[in-house]
Image 1 (tube, rainbow, N blue to C red):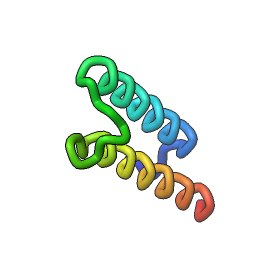
Image 2 (cartoon, one colour; image 1 turned 45 degrees about the horizontal axis):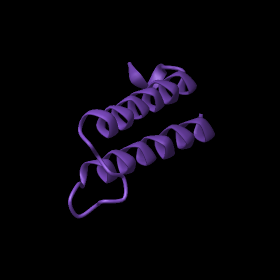
Image 3 (cartoon, rainbow, N blue to C red; image 1 turned 90 degrees about the vertical axis):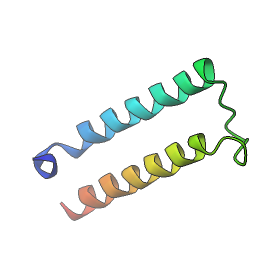
Image 4 (cartoon, helix red, strand yellow; image 1 turned 135 degrees about the horizontal axis):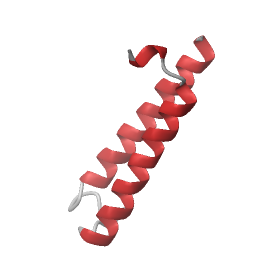
Length: 63
């Protein structure tokens, strides 16, 4: 079950996945991180990563 995992490991895995997607998007898909109206995907990835970080931090504080 995900809730019983070590949150630091979960946070590391999420961070690595986001970094790989960001680098892959920049290199292979020509994403520009400041071009929101034309390319909303980078912003969505950033929002999801930020939400995951907040969730992991909240669980660490609560736990």
